[in-house]
Length: 112
Image (cartoon, rainbow, N blue to C red; front, side, top):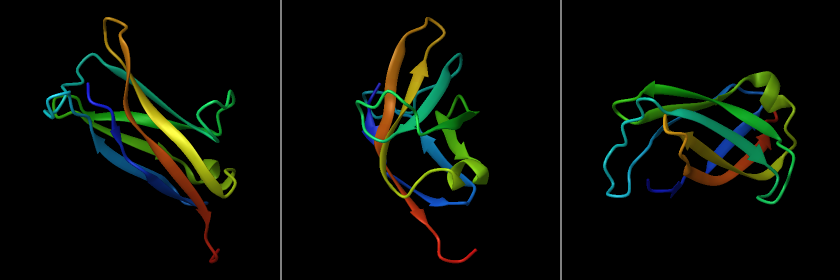
């Protein structure tokens, strides 16, 4: 599986949703049938505490499509700044691999 970088921007207090397509090492769409996925946001890679956990929905297993999402109450609780995240896939054979990683910029809006 190819690990690719996808940086995200989250506006505090807004509902966040980001579709992604997972690719294998040859650049082809990875069929996610039988996979589970999880994703966490942390202040830095060595941090032992999670800032937030994305809800990861497999929207089309055959097309390798997932969606990361956070509700507005969760994004409201994240302080402004830069964070890191990744997406962990777990196959039905319990093989774990990171498919996506990147930076997360959280910013506060000025209009409420």
